[in-house]
Image 1 (cartoon, rainbow, N blue to C red):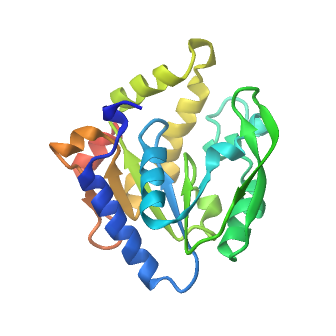
Image 2 (cartoon, rainbow, N blue to C red):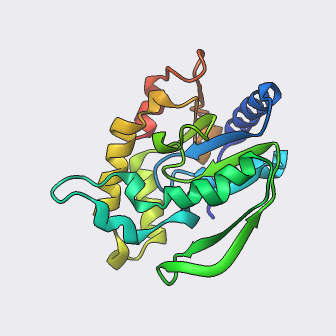
Image 3 (cartoon, rainbow, N blue to C red):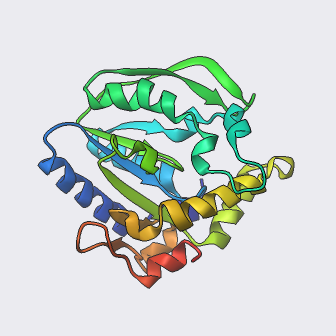
Length: 227
């Protein structure tokens, strides 16, 4: 992973302080979504926060489900949720971990494009980080307590994506679903915290904390999402 994929110290400090504050007032397991466009830096920030706090981590990528594509209505933009098996995510990961039980589930194999026979186990802790695109979906709202958006400029995200995705696997349908999700279903102002997924934040932090708990952001962070 290159330096530009790494979050700044300022970003991690704000995210860590906010996470600790949320944890202190929680009466039980707190579930925090770490959402954002593909290649914005979500997994890097989640990994760093987990290492610093001992939080459990579940990735929405493990619950990708291409078979659900047939549910999309013809002639319209697919809902981003249709790319994931949210029912399995709820029942096999979020619900047991939220109740303090170990989660055991099969993960999607991105190499074969099928559900793997390999099982992943995640031990419970006081904080559960649900990392990945669609983690802050309103369909998971009853199980997710707080939501963090990791933002990066569209041009930088596309460069990162093209480094990871082969040309024949490029999915314009996915990008359209993402734009719809973050533009309508989960706009920036709906998140509790927005942070930058760019190392350039070392010179210009671009970390936005909403003063009223997540209902307002400023134009700097909006530009990071390509708005």
